[in-house]
Image (cartoon, rainbow, N blue to C red):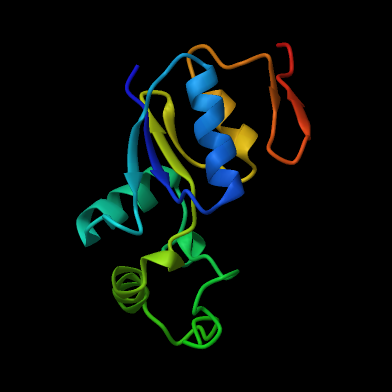
Length: 135
């Protein structure tokens, strides 16, 4: 299975998501999107695959969201995409892409539905235990 993660190594949720992918036996393609941001076309593909609005991909916490006034509904989708291109930290993460779908994995355990062999149990960095529900 091919797995791609748009990853920020400074983000605990992103690190936990990556660890769950690896625990499933997959070694994903890791795109550190702050170093190599997706271009506009790829951003639009990801937004479409996620089934969310452009605004839905914006991250507020720890970004220039407030200082740029991005909560104001005056900004068009094109303008919001321009901001994400100029400030990739505004792109929410981690985004995981597999043959099973594309998800914004917040919380990290959202990745479990995308994996062929998800771990039955996982311990997050903060000690929280995630147990995969039996179906």
